[in-house]
Length: 229
Image 1 (cartoon, rainbow, N blue to C red):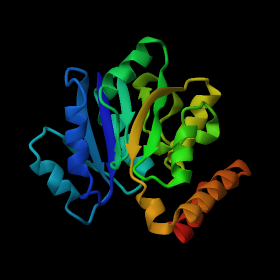
Image 2: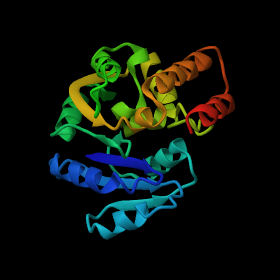
Image 3: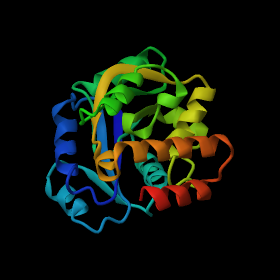
């Protein structure tokens, strides 16, 4: 059984469509629960979820995706955790694709990525996510992981306000516990549209390189906040 965990912060524009998408594109016999973990939204995200009458679990957390996702994982009852951003829509039968990999002994992984943009660079970046190279990974591709493996790693590192997905992925790559499902999850290019493709890509690369050279969680967040917040 899969527990879907969605960290949110002011996601009123996306959350309704995502929740219906998750229900419409899966066999509900495989979904233990959908948990939305709010980090202090100031819009009507929480009210929207509660009023949908979809039996969604809503939790309140301190701000920070790592904190939110860890709280959701702690409250979950499923054997498999599926962490998903609020603006990312997994493929039809996503649940079965995940469980098929679990049955093969693949305890963690993600989907290929597709942006909702026709910009040539974003299409190229999406195409590259089919490969297993570490540099092609990111939180927008979503993350499935068995609860046992997640607990063994210790969950998400809550010292990281940004880059938390990549810290967990690094641990999984070190353990050789990662697979890419050859199906596409469609995610919003809103950050690229807001700041510009080249600016966002440059700063993401800069964060990646800074971490490679030992930048602290505090330094990475300060850089992100200055350039992309």
